[in-house]
Length: 109
Image (cartoon, rainbow, N blue to C red; front, top):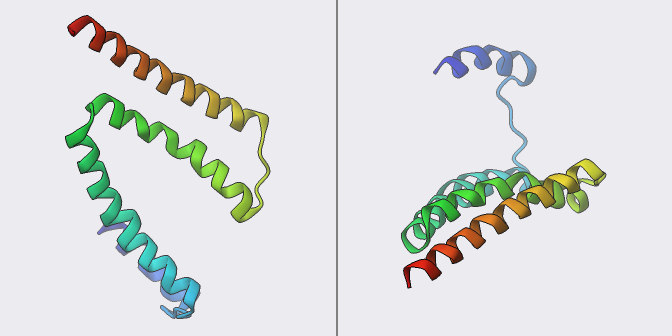
């Protein structure tokens, strides 16, 4: 509600609440409303039900590296050495989680 109060006058002043209803705009709204909000929520619930919660929550750490790799061809952003270091650190952490799960499974059975 605070955001609405703060940004509403700015939106009226800058754009006059006008939206250009083009195909990319409608696609963006549908993508954000359906895929990003609803489908990703149900996918997360499904993963939590079927997999270890620690492993599922560790998938959240892959969001920035995957975003970096998608932004390269889509937006033409340059890939940096620092970005790749982040990818490898994230992948290494995920590998350690997976290895720890395997060690626990071997101890139990």
